[in-house]
Each structure stands twice: as C-alpha cells, then as structure tokens.
Image (tube, rainbow, N blue to C red; front, side, top):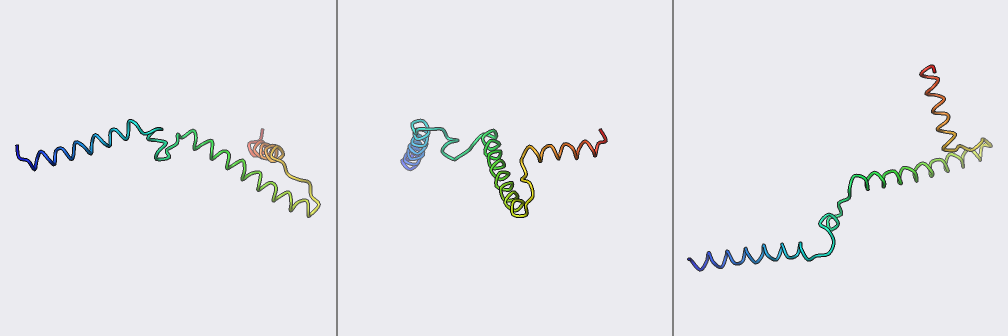
Length: 92
C-alpha cells in the first residue's frame, strides 16, 4: 500500500472518529445545540407574545378612553361585541 494513501486514510479516520466522539459524549441534544424547538414550543411562545400584545394595546386604548371620559374596554367585552356582530351578520 502506498504510504500517502495510508496517511490520508488515517487522517480521515481520525477526523471521523473525533466527530462521532464529540456527538456521543457532548452533553445535551443536537437540537439543543443548534437551538431547534418543536412546533408546539413555537406556538406557545407566539401565544404568549399575542397575549402580551393584546394587553398592551388594550392598556393604551383604555388610557386614551379614560382621558376622553369613555368606559374602558375589556377582552371579554370585545369578544362579546364580536360575537354580537357575527350573529347580526349571519342573521341568527
């Protein structure tokens, strides 16, 4: 066997073994290392951001309404108004 081929093969084998050993013995998962999350985790984070956005928007709107002397808005009131609007649109 040609010595060059043996040396190159040995170098490649050492690199492959080192990469496999890093994968086996490094703590955590590969997904955690690259920051991958499940779709459920993404949905939970998005829902939390949406709740926070809604709370901030309602607070800003209520601040303006208080300054004008109008009653404050609530999430429940907004949902009830939307349901009433939908029922009226559908005619039920």
